[in-house]
Picture 1 (cartoon, helix red, strand yellow):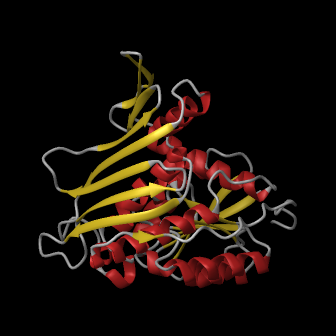
Picture 2 (cartoon, helix red, strand yellow; picture 1 turned 120 degrees about the vertical axis):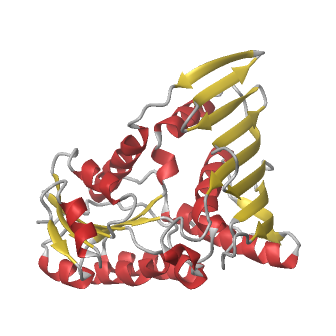
Length: 343
C-alpha cells in the first residue's frame, strides 16, 4: 500500500484526493494546509488525517509519497524536505520559480533515491490526449505552426493574494497560465524552444502581468504564438495545430476536432468528468513511476518550461528575442523499482 499525503488544500486538491481513491494500492493518508478547515474539507473525502505543519506530517503520518500543491516559491523547500524524509514527490507546475531551484530539486531527489514528477496536467487531459493520438497517427503530416489562446482572470481579488506576489508566484499570468500553454505547445510541436519574443501588460492595478503574448521558434522550425488575455468578453482555451495535411483544434469546451481535405470530424467530445480524469491519469502515471516506469513528462521538460518563461520576461523587458540554450543531457530513467521499502 502506498500512503500518500497532500500539502495545500487549494483549488485542485480535491481532484488529487478523489484520484487517489480510484487507484488500487493507494490511500490518501494525510492532508496539510495552514488553514485547518480547508485541510479538513479535502481530508473528509477519504478520511485522511489533518495537519497544519508539513514537516510534522512528513515525520508522523507514515507516508511514502507526497503531492505538493502550494505557492510556487515554496516548492523547493518542501521538495528538499520530502527527499530528506525519503518521500517520493509529485509537485504541481511550475516546477519552481528559478532554474537553479529546479536543479536543486532534481539533485536532492536523485541523491535520496526518491522519484520526482511534475504535475504538467495538460499531458493527461482527455481532449489533449486525443490530439496527441491524431498527431502520432501521421495522417496530417508534420506540425508546422501552433496558435494557443487562453483566457484567465488576473484582476486583484479574483484569486488568492500570493498569485500577485512576484516573489511567491515567480510572475503573473505568464508564469501561471502561460506555463500551461507553453507546456502543451512544446509537447505538440515536438521540440524545445530555440528563441522567444514576448510582450506583457499589467492592468487592473495588479503588481504582476495580467496579460502576455509569446512568439516562439522551436528547434525543429515550428512557429508558435501564445496569447494569454485576462478578463476577455468570452472564456477561451484553444490550441490550434496546423500541419502539412490539415489541422487540429482542441479545447476543454469544444473537444478535439480534425480538419483535413475540406472535411471536419470530431475525435473527442467534451465530458463533465474530463478534468477529474486528467488528474486521475496523472496520479496513475506517478504511481507507475514508483514501480520503475518512465513518466510521461520528464523533469527536463518541466525545467525547460520554467527556463522559457523566465526568458520571456527578459524578452519582454528588453524588447528583443532571447535565445534558449540547448538542454542538458536528459536525466536517465529510473531503472529499478522505487517501491522497495514502502510501508
